[in-house]
Length: 205
Image (tube, rainbow, N blue to C red; front, side, top):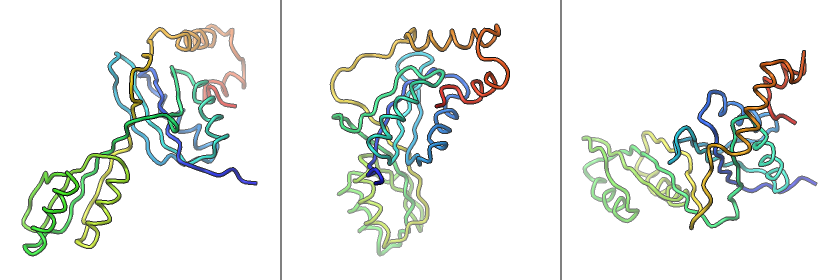
């Protein structure tokens, strides 16, 4: 019986090093899981980035993905926050046809959704909206009859409510990764073909 899929959200803290994003994306690709949303940005800590990954997978698969992400080099921590109490936000820019007849109605829609107009042209408007995914979906549906010319959306960013422990740059996981890389350089790690596999797919299972 196929495991029922649902949307899972992972928050991943990583060292700001080349190749980290590719390794995480490859993990999802190898297992056949589609990434629906991915955002990466700096945090309050130097040299640490935060990823928010949204993917539709089963509950058991989510646990395995969480464990396998943590095994990857340069990953400091990972948490599936799907069932946690969080704040989630996305941003969208929507360019819509705006004739003289429809302009007033469009401005009313912008007001109701607490969005804002960031560009006003003779035949179009660009509307900016920030909020939960459902809010953005609803605005898009309302604007479609007017004619959407262009749209771009960011991925979700998610934060737990309340106070959480901070990620330390000198975490045991970071020290383990440093030790692994040191062994590979000195030849005390995997040799031959195994070393090549480990270098290309660190943390793979």
